Length: 73
Image 1 (cartoon, rainbow, N blue to C red):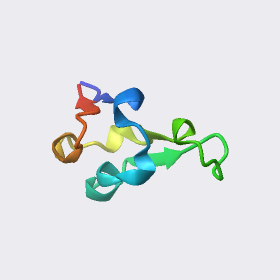
Image 2: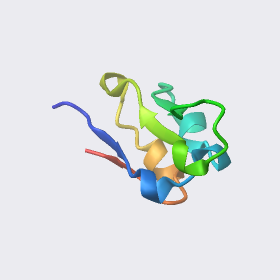
Image 3: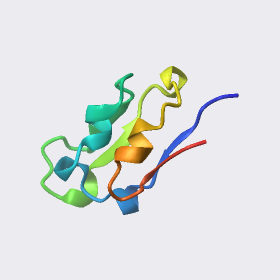
Image 4: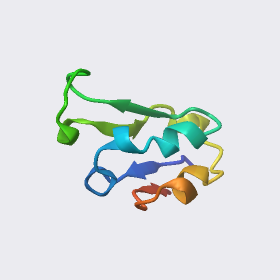
């Protein structure tokens, strides 16, 4: 079964203020980006998963997210 990790960008908000999922993930699957890496607009920034095939389904990202924006399917 293929692992799918969903990040609700609206719930997450501006990930530059948190970064907890990026810091806790043992496989370093998450990445933070914006169309223009110099953007100051919080609406431009996103957290996404770069390597879902490396996910061990540990659930650390889900537990650490203060806004409940991450789901593992």
